[in-house]
Length: 146
Image 1: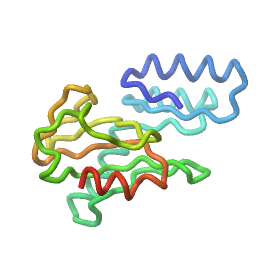
Image 2 (image 1 turned 60 degrees about the horizontal axis):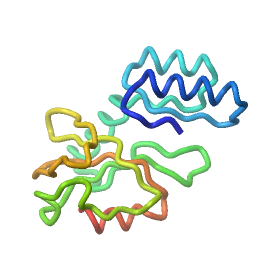
Image 3 (image 1 turned 135 degrees about the vertical axis):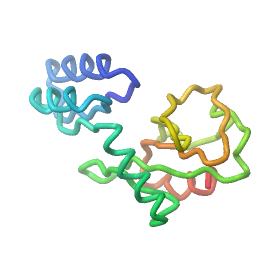
């Protein structure tokens, strides 16, 4: 998994992984052209962050789910999910959240823009947190954040 916030780092990581014969390579990218390039290199799942998040936010806006599942990895053990935060976590810094070990925060959407997950970021009313997490931890995240 290459999940940094920098496409060039993720691309380099994928190239190194490919050279070492890693059988499954999955990466997060911002730029659709880089996602296409990664596919050409044999990256199994180049996840284009803007497209994934737009689909999720559409589901949330339409009220389909409080926890929107954006993407499921092929074997089904991990998913990318978006959870709108509840009042009880407004005002807390990301570093204060006690989230499951198998969870990584990818981004925060504040209704207007996507924000990198800085540990010092203070959650605000209306924020949605986008995460990669194990399927067994989704309910726990909903309890912690929702």
